[in-house]
Image (cartoon, rainbow, N blue to C red; front, side, top):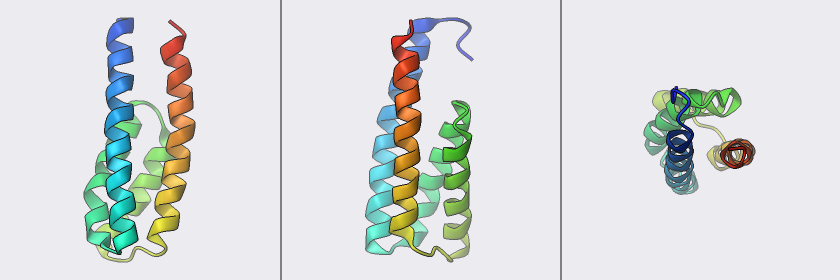
Length: 102
């Protein structure tokens, strides 16, 4: 994806982490407020971004939440967003290790 450009990889990781934190904050706010329709877009965005980094579990959790938000059937939104946040923490740790491996 980066053509072996280490600096570019680090930049991509940094952007992913920063953007994901903002997305997760929006998801938390929407879930806490019970505005499940507002979960669809951030879940969709996080799904795509996670897939770009091979974070398949994070992408799948986001995909499931996106689908439920689209259909209006989100159950236990705050718990599900917390699960996504916990999975993101695992991904972030792995990306921090990759960032430092260079």
